[in-house]
Image (cartoon, rainbow, N blue to C red; front, side):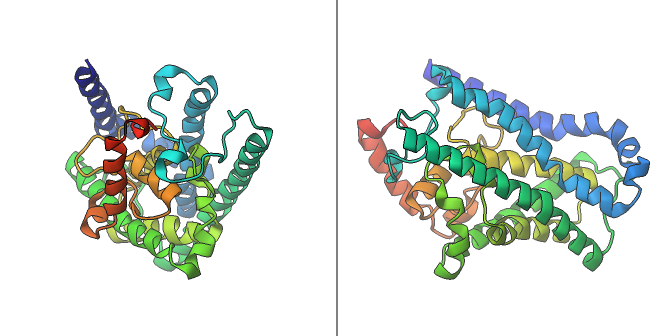
Length: 311
């Protein structure tokens, strides 16, 4: 029974990915030029800023989906919860809004308010500033036309290239962020030992530039994708980042079903253990540069100890 359920959820995950790759272009193409051709978006810089701001929509949607899951404590979803930091070598009395202890709930809401502030500053201010900088340094080289709408082959090549370059940049910038001189900024992100969706947006502005904006900018500059490809890829990256930090390992996740995908529990381990598993969407670079070993050793001990078999 469990095996058939796993197959079912994997089919659901694959179906979501197929809709993202094949369905999204069909849905967007008829309206792409009319939307981006609006008089208020006549300047190419305005288009690029708004395109980069689409992440607000994705994050808001994810919050609307996750808040009921966090609040209702339904057994169906709780079976996939992995936020018990004690199973990852972390603290057991961390931030939990469901805790019976008032001080724990207070710490949770205090950290959440800080996350909201950091997110609004980083995404609301830093992203436009960096977009303006890119525009004036590199010029306007992004197409919003449907005349050169990417084929599915071009979408595949560009999305894969963007992902591999971005993941490589993220892996090394994230790994370097753990050296003492940079960890003073990155430790803000590690204020979350047990993740909620807000942890995905909880970065010091300097850390945001180094580990988030930097790799993304590198990818876009090298690949120079069509505006729709970038729109599609941003959705993938943000969903993967949210999935990393949601605190649940859902078997229907559209970003975890394929070979060499990074597991949500790998990043959960990284937050709690503060070592290894520096990648996000892919386990490729963790394997290539031998930073997955600590997590593998922990996982083997966990599987051998029944009391730790559930997160």
